[in-house]
Image 1 (cartoon, rainbow, N blue to C red):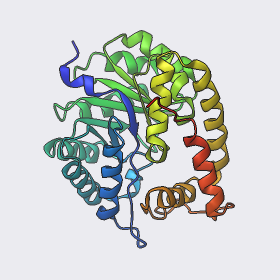
Image 2: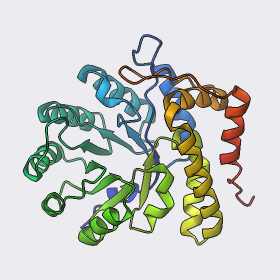
Image 3: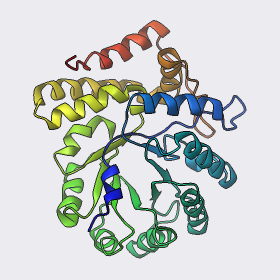
Length: 300
C-alpha cells in the first residue's frame, strides 16, 4: 500500500542545476536564487545532484554540503529528491544516510557505474541503498535498462516507491507500468517526451529544461492530461526541435539563458564537461526562450 507521503511524488520536477564559481566550487548564493525562483513558480519538486546537477563530478564532501544547503533553503516548502549514485555502493549508502538525516523526501540512484552490471549487481546495488534509510527510494534508469529481472525483484522491496526513467523508448516505460501497476510512481526523464511518457503511465517528469521553462512545461503537461492534445502536440514538436538545436552547446546555452532570463549564474560545467562557444547572440537566445514560453497561455 502506498503511503500518504507518496502523493508528493508527481508533477514537474526540475533536475536542479548546481551553480558553481569560476574555480568550480559550489556557489550557494546562486543556488538559493534558483531554488527560490522555482518555489515561486510552483514547480512540484526538485531533483538534486543528478546528471544536470553534475553530482558525479563533486566529491562526497561537496555532495553532502550541496544536499544540506538545498534542504535548508527548501525548508520543506517543496519536496526534494537526492540522487546519491556513486562509483561504489558504500559511498552511495553514506550519501543516502546523510540526505535522510537532513530531511530529504526521496532518495534516488543510478545503477552501477563503469563496471558492466549484471542483473544481480544492479539489484544488490539498489537494494543496499534502498534499505539504508526509511526514505522512499527511486532507482534511476538510463537508456535500455528496463531489465525485467531487476524490476521484478525491486517490486518486492517496500522501500522502492517508483523509478526515474530516462529513455526515449516508450514501450520500456509502459512495460514497467504494467508490471508495477499502481505500486510505483514513475517519472519520465526525457524532457522532449514528457507528454508522450504520460500516456505510458508516468505521474511526473524530471528534467533539465524545467529550470528555465518550469511554468510553461508544467502548464503544457497539465493541460495535455486535461485533454488539450493539439496544443500539447504543437508545443512538443517545437520543444523537441529546440532541444535538438541546443544539445551541442547545452551547458553554455542554459548558463547564458538562465542569466538573461532570471539573473542566475549557473557557471561553466566541471571538467571533463566543456562549455562550448555559443553560435547565437543574446537577442537570439532570448528569442528562442520566448518562442517556448509563448505556448504558456493560461486563462486569467
